[in-house]
Image 1 (tube, rainbow, N blue to C red):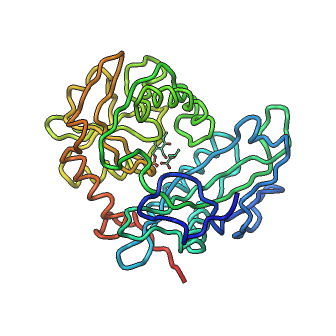
Image 2 (tube, rainbow, N blue to C red):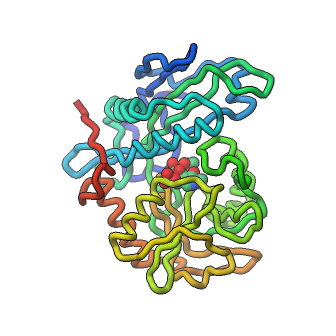
Length: 344
Ligand code: PLP
Ligand code: COI
């Protein structure tokens, strides 16, 4: 695969596909410690055919974004939260966590080195960063590895769900992405492998993604594809599911705080799929999804329409406006949410 050139990109029409940018960060863990990491231009990995990551999925990843501000500077949004979540994910899979402050430094180095690929402010795009930690040890017994590789690469992106703030349709699935007591809280590749078949079934049936229900009773909403769910009740309350098998989303915790600011009295609580009537609006939230309005959810062949199938609702719009104004540096957010990336 050849390297992407910035001059070949149409920053106003980016999707969510991989681009081989000039630089990525790499560090290796051997003999019980992380060795000094560095930027490299090689986008390929050389692994033993018996690397634990390949056979038994001892692999965790993250996703966060860098945003070009109006003044030309660059922000990253809450990288400390991603660093911390990766640590927790690594712990769940018995991997050596990458030091959290080094994680943030590595992300900033990758942004700086690939700065010509950060979409302009006006484009509404961003630079998606993908930190990845994998177990490289040759092990064929099911044992945790002792050697690890940490890498961070980047790619310029636009909307994850087609149409951005245009509502899309979701459907429940008989499949689960994660078990109760499984790895739902950790950002591990296996959860996503498990989501591919239900996701594909949903796409083939004309839906943008799946509504996962809780793995024990199939009654309570868990997540929407690769994003958390929120609903705005008819009296304006922001609700999002509480469950041990969903990913603790950085966007969700940010919107819980912003909903409080906006007087939406936010709560995390179990949300039954049979209780959708309580909501005037609904949405998916995540780094890739940002906020994507949910037009409808189909469950057991019955379609429930929220605010509209074509228009975003006012509360969803208000949350979106406030979130992206903070991320792109147009408005000040809560202390410490946004970090400047030095570009020189
Ligand atoms: N849920 C799943 C399954 C995800 O893959 C993501 C994306 O990271 C999210 C939720 C949203 O999390 P965050 O807001 O931290 O990106
Ligand atoms: C993210 O929002 O960063 C995600 O993880 C979504 C990704 C799996 C496409």
